[in-house]
Image 1 (cartoon, rainbow, N blue to C red):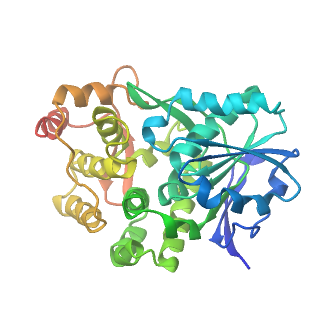
Image 2: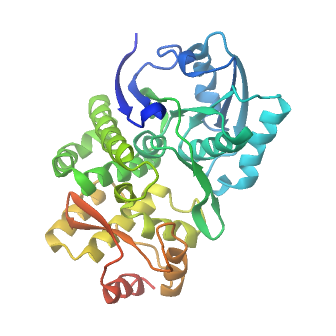
Length: 356
């Protein structure tokens, strides 16, 4: 029998629940109420599908299910991959009452959501994230999209899911490197707006690395609460939601310059958070506190060698750039982030130039 908790993303008539618990697959949580019509397309990848796709079917009793498997990895987060989902929908004669289900990590969720946003100008979709990073970040908030060779997530749309179903038991099969990458986004939530949670993470990071179920459940729940609150306040990132991108301007530049997939997203964000903290001008003791927690999570805190010109080119394609001006999420203090175009340009040059 499943035991679960629910967090609501409050967006008026587009509100939806995030359901978190164990034993939700195999029929432990009925998804049928979130499926408008009779047809579903489960989109997964070649790694996740053999583990979990058949276990989703009991959650969709009475529905007609088709499926497609995508290649695995960030390098496949492209328009061409999304096209295969659209082709499948067309081939099966999918109508507007078809529901598309994303089963996998952040790449699967982002591509699937974007395909759902585009097909017939928008069909329903459901998120079933199976990685920690997707559970605490990308599955919540309605950001969907694909990468472009010149920048991360440059092509996409806001398209909210009908429900996010998080079965924490899927983390038992998650490789350690993927778990650690997800912890970067968990740590980010504490760093930007919840110093008490940051302190809890310092006390429980070893338990999280051991995949302790209770520790993971709390980390996932609190991360989802933080993200749900911010998204409800600023759905389309016109203001406060930008704080969720702490470390991402640097992190996305790392991913772009190295080639997508060389560093995992969470690894790049970890190094990016330290760089952003250094740019913030906060006390060195607070920068060190962030650096230390990331190191204890076995995450990189120093970026790879990238030429200064490449840094600036990649960051210039960041979605937060306006009027050709870089903007960053910086810290007033640990646990207090803000979004600004005001920063020390010489310090930025020092941070990226010293790594050239």
